[in-house]
Every structure is written in structure tokens, then in C-alpha cells.
Image (cartoon, rainbow, N blue to C red; front, side, top):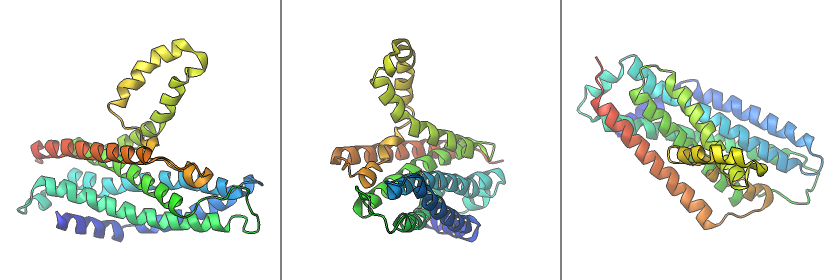
Length: 267
């Protein structure tokens, strides 16, 4: 498995992905810096909020492109046959490639996080907000939650790649999963509040959303940005349980992908 991790990291670094990360990092600094000008009272809060959303969007796209490069295209072009010709298991290939993508995402997250930190610090340096943003532990805990979020999306895309015969399908399914997982929490909150008094809507969609809950994890629970933005410290329960949920989902999804890959014929 180590060989697949190393080769995956090399392929990701040699590709254009690293250059894209640097370009996106600079763009993120510019967007977050400019966003601060839209709020004369809380410029750094606006810059950080916009930057975190942009960083998640960028990291998800990068992870999906890396899954497509390291897994989908190898399967589509039958390059995987060369890898499996060695005395290694298909599980080693799958998990090795996943940890390679995770390593690349970790590096990209660090770069984007530092760029965003710089953008927030440079936003209105001569203006003192009434409520300062937390750029220490709260910020890095939020970044860690975003990294776990992207890791779940990458695992789903990896599992789809093991069964897909179309190289672009993991990219599309992964993107749809990222959107649905992020929107699941707000949908539950809306229904829990009574759907603004629309009982018919709540009754019609409540059961459907509850059913989706068993298929898609609530990725919004990994978003702890209220801590650095507004000083709302999440309890240990609100951090530990979402992390365990994400790890369990990754294990289950990759195990299913491994079983499919074991039975798949590459003729």
C-alpha cells in the first residue's frame, strides 16, 4: 500500500494540481480581502466567512480531480492492470490511492489556510472590530473540520470510481454528494422549526429528508466556523460525534468500494 501512496503523491505533485492550489490560494486572498470592504463594521468577520466557504469549494474540487486522475482514469485506460500485475491486493491499491488523495488534500488545505489567514490579517489593519475573530485554535479547529469534510467527499468519489465505467461520473456524484451533505443540516433545522408554519410541506418532506439521513451524513455538523467568527465555542460532543460519524462513513464507503473492486473484471 505504501507504494501506491507514494506513487499517488508523486503523480499529484507532478501534475498541475499544485500550481492550481497556488493560483487558487492567491485568488482566495484577493476575494477574502475584497469581501472585507463590504462590511464597514466587521471586515475581518466577512473576510473569514467568505474565505472559509471559498476554501471548502476549492478543496472539494481539487479532491475530486485527484480521485479522477489517480483512480478513474487508471481504470478507464486499463492502467490499473499494470498495478495489479504485482503481488499486491486490490485493497492496497484502493486504500493507498485514498491516502494519497488525503495527503494531497492535507497539503492543499495547509496552503489555502495560510493564504486565508494572511488575507484576514491584512483586511482593514487599521480598524479594530468590536468582536475580534479567533485566528488561533478556533481557526485551526475549523480548518480541521473542513479537511475531514473533504475527506468524506473524496471517499465517496473513490467508491463510485470502483464501479463506474465513465471517468467523469465520480466527479459529478462527488460534487452532488458534497452539496447534499452540506444542505442536509439546514433542511433538518427548517423542518424542526415547523417549516415556517407550513404543516403540509413539513409532513410531505419530513419523512423523505429523514430517509436521506440514513444514506448521506450531515456534513454541516463539521462546520465549526461560528467559533472563530463569533466566539461560539462548540461543546466536546458537537465535535467528537461528527468526527466519529465522518470516520465511520469513510470506512463503510471504502469497504463497499473494496468489495466491488475485488469482483470487478478489467478485460
